[in-house]
Amino acid sequence: MAKKLILFDLDGTLTDSGPGITASVASALEELHLPAQSDTELRRFVGPPLAASFAEFCGLSGDDVTRAIAVFRKYYFAGGVFNNAVYPGIPALLAELKAAGARLAVATSKSAKGAEQVLTHFGLLPLLDFFVADDGRFGDGEKALIIAEALRVAGCPPEEAVMVGDRKYDVEGAAACGVDALAVGYGYAPPGELESSGAKYFAATVEEARAVLRALL
View (cartoon, rainbow, N blue to C red):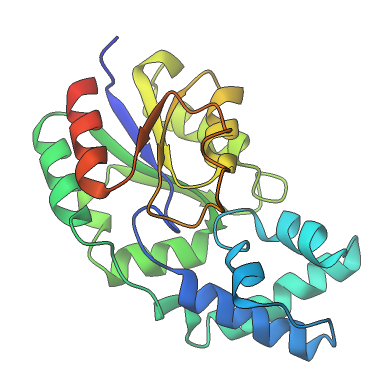
């Protein structure tokens, strides 16, 4: 069935946001007197909901997770949000898909404030029909809830949508909603994560993603 709605993750899929996120996490860990993490370990924070990351990767729970998120956001919005870059070819890809008649949206576990700042700063917002981010309505940014909300906003049945993302959270969230996923390998997934994620489609580069998506329209 042809796809009418294309949902994109943001961090690691449309933009290379890792430098700002990892630096902000490192600063938060230092302020909270938590053990420092290596560059490889910090990369794990790019993509998943922050609450899940601080819980899984730092062993935090309850109020400690809430505090860690608040400290992270202090550093992130002080400058890390724009320590970021659009992946080459993404603006052209979005423009081409829109011209071909697809509806385009971002579905991200990133905070709504952060998502809007990034999309506006890099000129991507006009290329989208809408975006759904973590505005407090979706637990701790659970991806399945965000994707479900995007389907609702678009009035689109799951079988007519595809989710594009760089982490297993995107693929698993899509599967929970009955949506096919295109996993992209140029983002922040650790080795082997996407291969075992169950994604229906895979693209190693932006150009490969373009070919897959054009074939699905």
